[in-house]
Length: 275
Ligand code: PXL
Image (tube, rainbow, N blue to C red):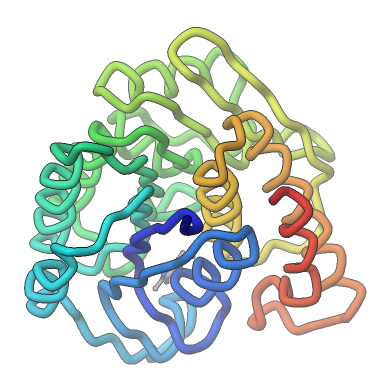
C-alpha cells in the first residue's frame, strides 16, 4: 500500500510563495507524495525586480533518467524555464504514458497574466506549451494563457460564457481531455469554468479586493492533489476555489504585505478533510 505519488515539475522560487514551494506544501497536505523536479531556481519569483535566475535545463534529463525505477500516479507541470525543457517534459510524459498504469497528466500552462507573458517566456515557448497541453488529462490555464494558446486576442478578464466555452473547446480539440479556465471576473465574483468535452461546470467564488501572485499555483496544486486522491474534477475545482478564498481572506486579515503572496500555511490542515 502506498499513497499516490506525483512528479511535480516547476521552478523553485526562494521567496514569493509560488511554484514548487506551493506545490510541495499543498499537494502533501492533500495526502499525496510530491517528487519535485526543479526547472529553474530563482531567488524570488519574476514579479520582483532583480531576481536571480538559474536555469536547470541541462540537469533535467539525467535527473529524470534516475527516476526510471519510480512509478508516478500523476505528473504535474507548471513554470518551465526554457524552450528545450518543454521538449524534455514532453518526452518524459510520452514515455510514462506508455507504461502499464499511465499517470494522470496535469499541465498548468504557466506563461503570463493580465494579457502579458512573464519576462522569461518567449514566443517559441508559448507555441511549445500548447503542444504540451495537448497531452494533458487536465490543463488549468488562466484567460491570458488560454488566449495565447489558442491565438485569441486578449480582451480582459470579464469574458462571456460563450467566449469561455470557445476557448475551452479549442484547447479540448487539441487533445487535452479536461480544461479548467481560471479567473473569469464577473462583478464581485471569480468564475472557474471547467469543460470535459461534453459538459460545463462553473464554480463561483467571491472576488477579493487585493490581487496576489501565486494564486494559479495554489489552484492547480489543490486540484492536482485532490484529483490524484480520486476526487472528480468539479469537486476539486470547488475545493480549490474555497481554499484560495479562505487563504486570501486570511492574508488580508493578517494585513500581510502583497509581496508575501497568499499566506496559506495556517489553512493547509483543511486539505486533509478531503482525504
Ligand atoms: O506563479 C507563477 C509563477 C511561477 N514561477 C515563477 C513566476 C511566476 C509568476 O510570476 O515568476 C518564477
